[in-house]
Image (cartoon, rainbow, N blue to C red; front, side, top):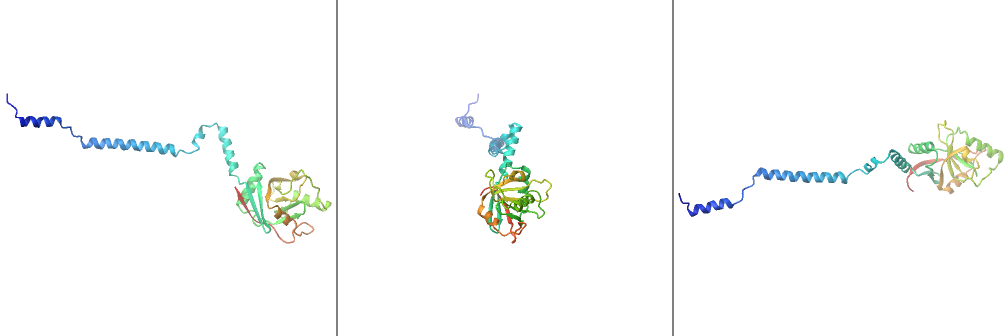
Length: 233
């Protein structure tokens, strides 16, 4: 049996103890796995972090979703309208619980500048200011006849002054605005009230004091310069 030299034994022992080398393909594979895991975790985080707020509501009953939609509609409805006149500005609080059709139409007309330049056609002292079409009917005609017949109009503490309304006629192509300057007993029978003056009552009274002819039409033209909607004051 051939004897192995000590030098060869030393070389063989070193070869047995040295660790095996890892191939480049294995390193690349493990790096790819780590990258994929990190990307997966990041994608999961972004999904839950940026999840739309309305998704939790998808499991709610239909009636609750409808109620929430109606509430959001009410919130989006403007709360106030500012009427600019030559005498000053009048701030109107819009009644959201008033006739939905009237409120919606008023807001739509405000957005289309319908009231811009609208004249005040009739001014009846201690009674009402009417702005709108010249060919008025309904409430304006009846109230003017009452004013002429009685000279003064009976007041009632049951109804407040400075209310905002329009005619009840559904066939009217225009949109008249009435501003009451005194309590009117049959107010709700004549017009649809959809708001009230909360600021600028003194401006309403100044308009009320202008000179008018026998038909209660202002001798000097005056009217609405502009009407703007506001959510907050």
